[in-house]
Image (cartoon, rainbow, N blue to C red):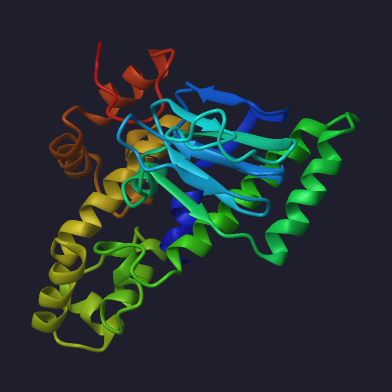
Length: 298
């Protein structure tokens, strides 16, 4: 399994996270939603996206997809902030689609760690066709239409993120860049595909076809930590989501992430998350706004 697929599973548009706006200049749209990610895509016209007082305005044209990492407000307008109202006239009308996404799992939180505050992916034929279809679907309201819109937004987000991540140099360091390495890539995929296997350094080196010393050095250089440390972190990330989203016992969760007994699993979990598995589950389920991140007992 591709680790990138793991990260995207917990990022979803949900119900009220979709809006379509028709804007006539002069216009300014201030978005203050506390969403984890916000997607903006013009269907007609164009707009300038700014985040923060010192942020450089980014032009977003028809077919482009802009993604803003939250939380935090940002502004879309018909002209850059530095341009006076009497400057060059913008397009007559802008039709804008906005989708918001909540990151509700520890796994998906890792995605936010590699994204810039703002990214703009240039349009392509595939995205343009998808946006046209999204525009058509937003104009009708048959039963189940909101689900269709949500999934179309999910598709658009995945396409944009995948395109950005595939650009050379998009992610300067870390596990995503390491996926392309001949030694480290196979090891990362093996860990993600089967976190419950009793991995040893020798077994992981066998997946890569290199020595343990070579793997350890290369892995630490690209990922920033040794292979077995990464494996423990990944297992504890998965465990946190399993505790939140399922009714499995602590022992069952331990088994799913590669621990033979609940005691050893609980010790590792508390070392990473600061609380025991049972305390983590209780705190998250009793918190009204818990999103699976940094939950702690009340």
